Image 1 (cartoon, rainbow, N blue to C red):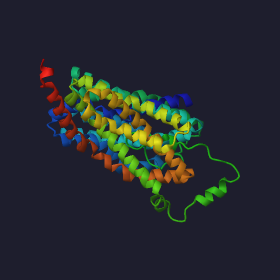
Image 2 (cartoon, helix red, strand yellow):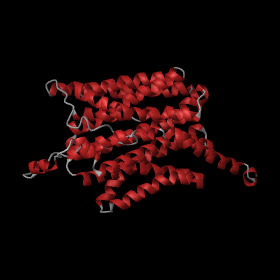
Image 3 (cartoon, rainbow, N blue to C red):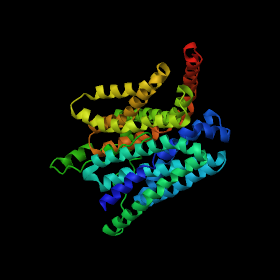
Image 4 (tube, rainbow, N blue to C red):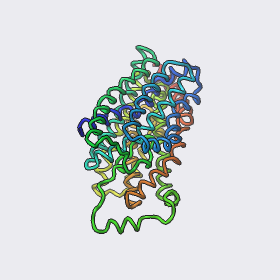
Length: 409
């Protein structure tokens, strides 16, 4: 059962970013066909992030009431309905479908950390790495292949075609869920972290959610009693500086991720001069290199490199993309790759810091759970705010190069 469940989790992960990143390579076609402004289409791409913030408490309560398996089934249905609805109608249908997609992905973001915590606790690190890779693989697929599909069948069919990933994950998930129910007498307990919140926008946090097996040493009970706050957990978590540090890190990471994911293909097409298909494939570097960042940072930290130095390097890599596209756009493969590494590395750095500073698993869970609702609304505006000005600047630079005497000759 464990092998089949692992396969289902990884196939499900392919669906937890891909419906969002699929829109970016064809955003110009969508804008033209639906007569949207750049700001409106930015709001369209940011809607799923808003759903993450607003729907998280309700989804967490639903997991506690119905169980993980039922919520994931609802998520599968929502993904199918949302992907189809977004592709078949007018502006209203596009926005409604995107909201349904956002709610469905929110359910997955809440449920999957609990599944790994519950069923893969002894191999949480390995499963976390595989899950991270699957998330980014889904983004790579849609970022690189949606534009070529749209060139053949139009943007509506290209976006709708990614619905095929849903049953590919749903079938093994259903089989594994039935086997687990039989093995556990028909129960599907949500797990101890059902209210800890979902994966933040822009990357998974399973390394922290999947806490290691509890310490059973003689000092454990005393430590737990010592860690228990006299004030309500919500107030105690909000008074911890690490909670607000985590909030700022979540918001910054998510803002960067969604702004870049939404607009990088258009920037490369309009500003650097790549075709639509080539720009989508080029932008997939940002998604692909995140795997290297997620797997590389733990190795660096294990060698004793100071956390501040690692964080400074990650921040510098983030900055190379906007600065590099403005200063030297011809080197876009380097800038996209460095930002991709930063995307994957960022969460490892953040959650390693939380684990070191927050103490026992209970305070860590409260810090994560209380920081996400504050952090998630900020990146909702990222697609609408960031790229139009970047696109105009890189496009203007590209036109100047194209009209120069050297380029004319």
